[in-house]
Structures are given as structure tokens and as C-alpha cells.
Image (cartoon, rainbow, N blue to C red; front, top):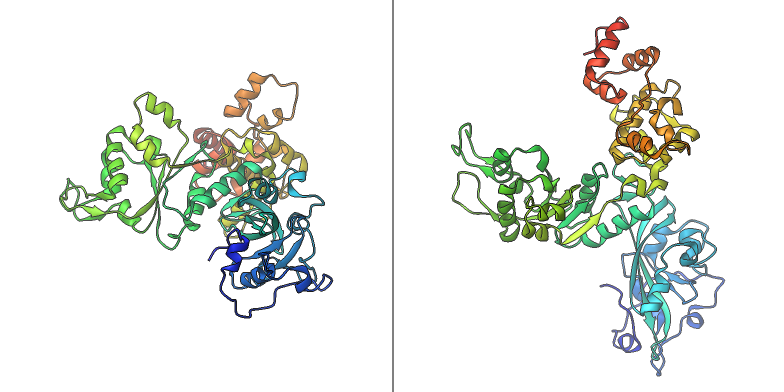
Length: 490
């Protein structure tokens, strides 16, 4: 049962509560009876009864007075957010959660208490809280409690840790703590429990698949399949059979029945990545699937029922495509019930150190722990922060993978970064040169023969992969390695 905004009448109508665990009340405060008023004939709400009720709530909850002071905390809160030797009760909520000396709104953040007081109703916000495990994303819901005179006498705050994103470096999943990133995570948390179709919008490389995965894991379908359909990687002739499957003999080469991706996603989430690339001729069939929840395998007359949560993503301007006749408006309105904008890296510059640290962890993990630990020098990090990152997180990873190959002592310095990144920290570079550099690294760093030899000696992948990481064409890499006395790689 969710905690509601209590009025005097609603408290009076509550059934008698059986004795429960004693609420957490600070020993240096007055007794519970004098701090939390009992029920009176005038209808004053009994906050003590509310606190006892919250003990049965498995979700962490606290009771606050209008001056931000924590009056009580249930056992679930103490278990998840309690710090041994530190009392929460009697302290200000912003001191405990943010280590601030002033309320959140005075520190530049959204304060749910101030908003709840203004609208006289519930408010919900996603914050970064200090917890025993370090900084974490926490979904905060705050509801006011009214007395018989409709005055707010206290607030109930319920907290839920967001598991789909990390506010500290992580070797997996979404990471970030910038306001633009938190806004996207907050929207994701709101829509995850529903069945609304979600459309993820943003530039290429902003992590759409990771967001879709996080949405799936935050939903009630988390234990069911998460199926990715790369709409840009399926040809028009194969799109229908890949999506819906086919029967034996449906076409040349169909030697048996094949289950389509829609069936594979049964009960789970179907993620249509780059939906803007779906051929116009297939969009009507996709629309029918979404509207009716039915489909037929290629070569079959039998109608199948589909059961999936739809998440779509694109970096293309779908509304402009509609105007140009390249995308169906009816399909757009079906998939865009809940759009979420995913911020570009330049919109969350403060996250660059966190992203870089996380990427280096993932590079090491991809080598099964065999790679040495690599760090970034302060001046190199400053160049990373100043760059525009037109390719977003994907580009940042490519730059760091290349730099790792060249960082012989385990420290990435400006010398291991493309020369173009140095332009962003200089005021004397013309805007057109900076624009060209941001687009294609106009003046890439020239690799010395010694650098190239060291990188090749420590690389165990294909020559094409090494060329991509070094920013060279495969042909150039072959010629240079051959000139150095090698065989040009695998």
C-alpha cells in the first residue's frame, strides 16, 4: 500500500494498528509522545501512528517536519541508508543526503519539499544521494501531511535506489551524474513500470542500447527476453522474415521453420534500434504489428499473437522525414508515446572524467584483466573535457583505446591523444578549423615509427582493428609495418 497525503479525516478512518517495531527516534530528542502528537478530538493527525505504519513498508521512508528535520526513519531506511555511528533522526534531510549546509534549492538543485509545499501535493525527483556505498541515483517521492486546518505539519519521503545507472565509475551499464543525464534517467524510471512505447532520441553514440537495456531491467518484464533489432543492418528483402520468421518452403533456401525476432521477444522487450532506417514498404506491416499485436510468419496464413514491450531509437529527425514522405506519421505517433532525449557528451561535459574512467575499466575487462591499469594525466583529461565529441561516447572509447596502445608507462598524456583535441583548449584557433577538426580530426597526430612498432607488438587482434584504433587506413598500416621489417600483420 502506498503512503498517501494524509488528512485528519483519513487518519481517523484508519483501522487500529497492532503494535509494531519501535520507530527510530533519536535519544537526544523529546520522547515520541511529546514530539509526535497523538490523535485529538479536534482531528489533529497522529504522526506517531503514521510512523508505526511506515515500519511495515518495505520501501525506505522517513518523516520530515516543514523545517527539513528528520523526525523518524523506518527500518528499511536504516538498513539501506544508515551509517553505523551516525544518527539520521534529528538532522536535516539535505545534510544527510547531500552533505549540504543549505536546502537543495539553495544549492542549485530541485527541492521536492519546496515544490510540494507550493503545489500542496506530492512531488517526485531523481537526486544523487550520499549513501554507505558512495554516490547513488535515488528516486525521491515526497508527500505532505495536513492537519484539520489544511496546514502542512509534516512530510513522508519514500526513496528508491535506481539500479540501472551508476553515479561512480563502473565497468558495466550507464554512468553519469550530470543534470542532463539525470533528466533522462528520471524519465526512464517514470515510464519503466508502464507498457507505453518509448522512443529514445539522440545523436549516434549516446548509448541508446544501454538505455533500452536499463529500461527493460527496470520494468516488470526484466526476467523475460530483451531482443535487439538493428533496423539499419537488415536489408529490405530480409526485414519481414527476420522480424516475423518464416515457414518451411516459404522461399528458396527456407528448409525449415524459423522463429522471428518478434516471437523471440515474447513476454519481454523488443528494441527497434535505428527505426528511422525501416524501409517505407515495411513500415505499414510494423504499424499493424504494433496496433493489433498480431503477425504472420512469411509463408503462413496462421495469425500469431505478439506480447512485447516496444522501445525504439533513432538519431534521425523523424518529423522532418514525415514531411519529406520518408516516414509514416501514423507509425511515428504509435512509437513516440513517451520520447526521451539522450544527451550528447557536450551536453554533459562534467561526466567526461566519469565516462573516461568507466571506459578504461571496460577496456581492461575486455582483455579479461590481462591489460595493465591505465590512468589519464590531468592535462590530458582537460583536453578530453574541452573536446566537442561529435561521435559522443563511441568516439571517446575509440580515442581511449588508441591512447591505451600508446601509453607505454600506463599513463595517457596529451601526446597519446589526436592533435585535433588540443585545438579545443586554444583560443587562437579559427572556428572553421575547429569545426573541421571536430568532424574528422583534420590534423591527426602523426604516429612515429617507434610508436607504431610498440603498438603493433602489443596488439593481438586483426590488422583492421589495429588500423581503426590508430586512426590509419588498413592499407597505410600494412605499408608502414612492412617498411619496418614486419609482415604487415594478420
